[in-house]
Length: 101
Picture (cartoon, rainbow, N blue to C red):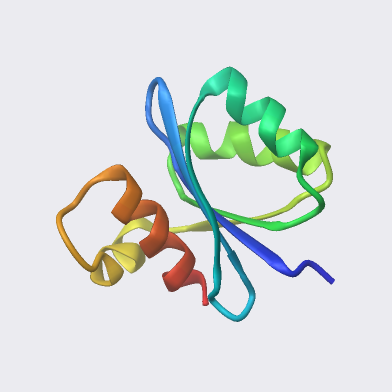
């Protein structure tokens, strides 16, 4: 069973990750480039990776499945109500995890 949920806010150059346990305890928050993201995710144990659905998310979902993760895509309108503070990449990544729960 996968005990880690990783919310990923995709952008052009920098991705923001918010990792939590299935109970909601924060494990990490990271800001990574595309190359760092690929390397970091390949080193992680299998986890549930959640992203907002967009054109780039489908590509990254396939890449995450290749390294052993389970991927869920969420429509952006379901994430928006869970943003707790100003809209930025870190807040979006956290909201993605909360919306997936």
